[in-house]
Image (cartoon, rainbow, N blue to C red; front, side, top):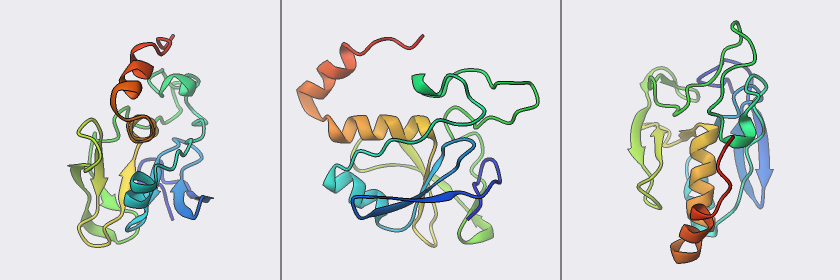
Length: 147
């Protein structure tokens, strides 16, 4: 499967019976039908890898690309919706919120029901799902600021 942002071949990853695809360049994630819901309901903490062209990936991927010619992923992953990487041309992804939190918007396919998340969105979603409620709010409040 090709990454919808970079166009490179995404790698299949498995964690706790959860299968998803991760782009080695921008660290974007693709979940097939039901996989994102399984991650949320079972509170599986995934850790997206570090993008190859983003030196500040440890701070959430908000830094500048390593070089002018390097192609970086859009910070939010929603700059343009694009086509579904599974269904192909003609099937546009639509922006939607997850039922777990209103703080993360994902791109979903209306045909195959797959979901695309940028690295930053995946980190926020895992944080909100794995650390909900009061203690999660405290954790986010006292987290070290990104440098």
